[in-house]
Length: 309
Image (tube, rainbow, N blue to C red; front, side, top):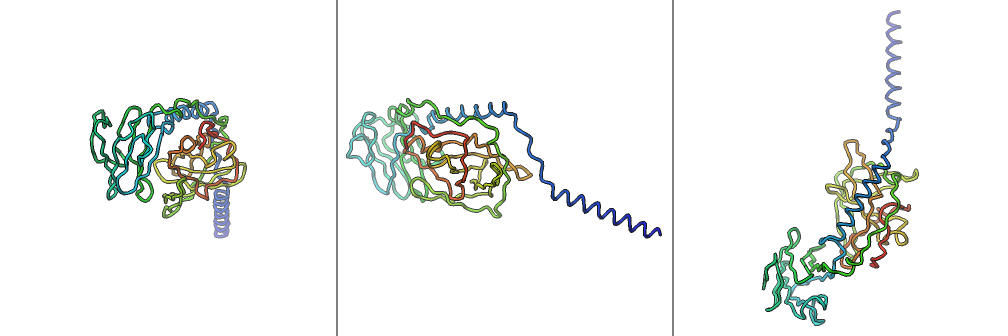
């Protein structure tokens, strides 16, 4: 008899363990706590203010005045139309000098009597640093430096601190801030991280690393986005508002990396226009095919009416 009692107890314990494990496996994770709408509105408003300050800063997008691609060889520059690189006519002399590109390196020669400055001092010739710490040269309200893009292509990026677009800027409209557009997402890791193909406005492509797909729901429907890896995840996406209410070539968004539980939040209230919404002289990436959402994301920045690009 005791052995029968022991067997009964053992069977009951096994059944209880099975029940608990089954319930644990089947029970979904509790939803995240709701965000305080007042605090959230303050956060998005402060983010928007910083965004507007960035656009109008010296390193913002509104003061771009030219983008000149360089091939191997010598390229003259100045205001006259006969130059290879034609700078704004009312800003510089007709003939300023030339850029020389050889074996992937770029230098500059400045004509006598033309006060091109580097760190406030006039130069006649120098080799130019490209990329991080790029050499910046100035003449009057203009400044320029060399950028490098896919395949080693190099270009002169020109800024004007008195650009008309900068002077006319009155801000960027946004949708009403809505906490419902702050959605929880789970990352489905790519092991190993995969390279995703990102097209650009210049017809080139970039291969960028993605750590995994961000999976989330909008109105009960599941969607996925492939972010680009970094300290924050960078998302280039399109949605059904593009072209009418928002910029036609999509928008950008940063997302905090997932926590230990593999979840994070995508706050579409922080979706913003790419540089090409403001200037024709940017080299914007475009949304990868898999990042085109079949839903209208009515959050974040609207189309910039002063752009026209």
